[in-house]
Image 1 (spheres, rainbow, N blue to C red):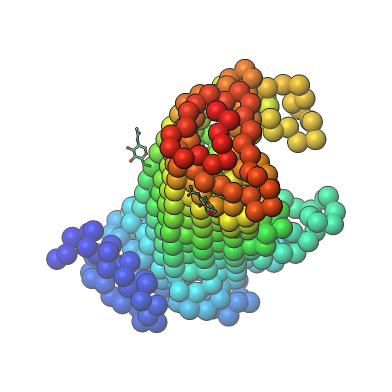
Image 2: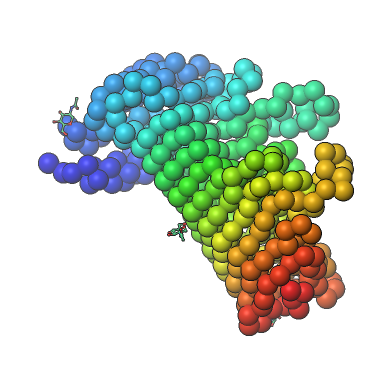
Length: 394
Ligand SMILES: *[C@@H]1O[C@H](CO)[C@@H](O)[C@H](O)[C@H]1NC(C)=O
Ligand SMILES: *[C@@H]1O[C@H](CO)[C@@H](O)[C@H](O)[C@H]1NC(C)=O
Ligand SMILES: *[C@@H]1O[C@H](CO)[C@@H](O)[C@H](O)[C@H]1NC(C)=O
């Protein structure tokens, strides 16, 4: 009999073959088709309890399971998948269809959420959270519901998401909070460039997270990196429209976990507000950012290609005349090229209390089509290596 890793690889291949059949992988893997639990692929029948029952059945056995979602559209209210009574640490959602959010979600923070789970994979599928009516409400009045994150994982380990599409989230698309060992690959995220708070992927209090080969078009941050993120690897992600890849906002709280060892490699930014950003409130905090590697990015018409902003204090509320307590050190920008939509292509606006240290810029070529690009430094200490265009202010 094949070993578990071979079987998991097989599940993966079969999930991606878009076959209609319900393959019997082997005796060792149980297949739970949501249709057998009462789900209806008609887009109008509520399939929430069918999905929960399939999850319950998968959890009841110690063996690896797949939860198969055949082609079609499934209407789902908010769903919380918990690890209570879960005996297995290998559940793969093999999704060929589209899951759509029921029109009125009862104010949950997430539409689809996983709590305390181990070894959950989501392969394929589209999630449509039906965000536009909420965005329209937020654009016209102030007393709208907050909206839900489309998909969230809390305190979970060994999570894999491959080939998922997330459309029109109400708030953030995908959130990892308190997770370890996460792999996200070939994910597509799509929302309007002016949709509010629709961050693509948000990571916080999590370690060993990889996000690669993904495309994120949205209204807020492409990837936002919150306090307590450690060993994050981002590679070949295309962002835009949106606000770019951002470490922060940090210093929201006085007592805050730091961000360390983040690599962003070969990212592409198209028409985004920012490219590679580190951002903190101008407020006291014991947070920090250290060991960040921004390697080989391409910028196309990006407003702020390289930016550290430690003076964030919107509307001067809760922080006027204060400075950021967040200490930023050991940040490398290597091989960053392309165009800036504004004159300031590089901006390091660091804290006067904690200047940025160990900033290194090398092999950077950012031009501005209409004027000579410039760089701006405040309280930033570091050095340049090789060609740096615009001339570095370090
Ligand atoms: C669980 O897996 C074992 C092999 O690892 C297999 O012999 C057994 O039939 C499986 N049980 C079920 C209920 O599928
Ligand atoms: C930094 O994180 C990467 C994964 O993103 C890991 O391979 C590497 O070992 C980490 N380095 C340190 C010094 O922890
Ligand atoms: C920098 O980029 C501009 C525009 O892409 C290009 O014309 C120029 O040759 C580049 N400079 C160097 C030194 O590579």
